[in-house]
Length: 137
Image (cartoon, rainbow, N blue to C red):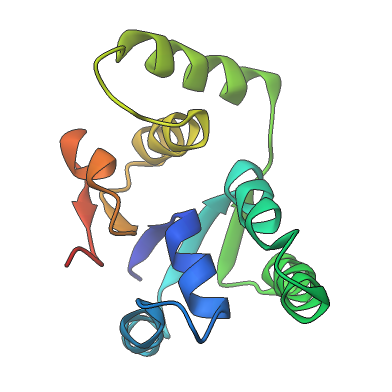
């Protein structure tokens, strides 16, 4: 079974039909219908924060999607922990020349720990760390 990591970019584009990457992400999702998707609580926090001020409909839809993710046996949501936070902080601190967010650093550390290489994103920061960005333009 293919296992891929899903970054915030993926979830935002999947939910929002007005996102410029929506069609590309929907197509990728269909092609990954039998894959297991891994994401983190931190990614979902960033996802919900993105939709917080975008109107009642999208805010509600985002919250429902997160609930569905937690119930979907093909989606693994890695829980937030102190250890994960500290590992992410170490990477964040060690890359002062990069614009990595803390969420990206935590995600990268989860991917390394789980032996994952493929990430559903277009974020070049993941490519800079040697990961395969499945949604790059």
